[in-house]
Length: 207
Image (cartoon, rainbow, N blue to C red):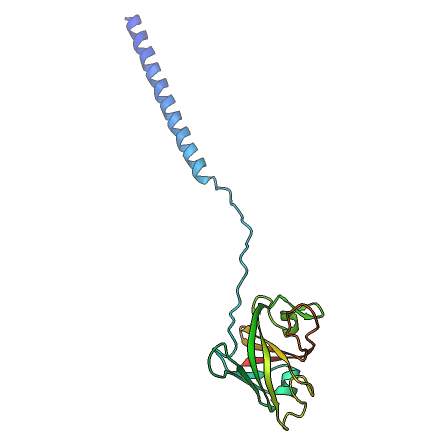
């Protein structure tokens, strides 16, 4: 009898131990799942290579009416109307309210961070513009200065030979128009002689 009881006791003990081991293993498995789910993957940080673009336009295509905003523009040229004479790629007409009208032929389009030939300055520096936009360079065909233009043309009493222009949205979210006038025989942006900057004029789109 005692041997039978001992055998039953040992069997029950082994069964209990087996249950305890199974329960412990299950608990460990749950803990592993919890720990695994709470481990955050390492974050990979890549350098930002994108450069924000700036809205810009080809002059005279989208907007024509511009209000003088810097001292040069207010005192020398007044407000500006810019228009395409016939078709795109042909002459552009810059009609200033103070009595100056310029007809100019497009000759190049360059990044505004390119050297202008004026003392090592870029087109953006000369225009007071944004280095992320383009500058449009024109050869002046003719400049008509009326008697109402008390201070002469864009280069005063000397003939304006070239103009550089940028049309873009500035930091204040306004469309602006920048014009730089040159009296040199060589166009700005070319290696060689100084294009002889006369003045820069700033305008803002009329609402």
